[in-house]
Image (cartoon, rainbow, N blue to C red; front, top):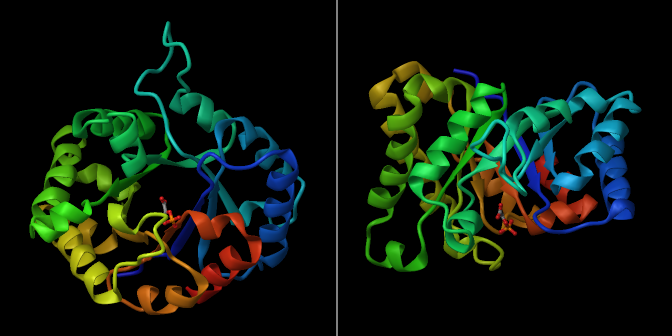
Length: 254
Ligand code: PGA
């Protein structure tokens, strides 16, 4: 079993051209050709072309992957405001988030829509990063596994377990996102093991190779103990991804 560690920086709705340039350059400066950890940044749509150009100009540009935070289920047509997977691909994206809890909660994305986005991303060769997570109330009601299981099953039903060969899963407890409250390494490990087991029960090899990232208030000072857990293969970083030195230390923690 070899799972290549991945750290992805989710910039959310932050940035301008100056910040995008500074942050991208700082990350590129810190990357070494022999580094084993895969590093990705997920800027807002309008900055994808700018980051793509910065990567093309850099000697280590191929060490930094590009991704988007959202994708349309549609390929083309009269869908004002939407961005297709093919467009993301043309701007150099390899990854795209689907089912981030902010999309589920604030933009009413259902399990079915998330599954459709997962399929649309893969149709154009993007690797979806499927985000799963329970709310605080659900954790207190001890239904974490039921919630995560349901979110995962919706995608498996639509895409098939084989699709997880070209996908990443991110466990992001909703109560830990942007709150400064992190899941303990043991809490995170338990859910990661559950996710891996669920997939492995359908296909042992795919379950074994599946990269499962942890997200939710990952910071330089808690990254090491989280990443030390057996089933945590990297991180999906929000707030700390906006500060180059924090993001770089988190990558180095892997
Ligand atoms: P956070 O965000 O690191 O700021 O908690 C993580 C995410 O939402 O992907």
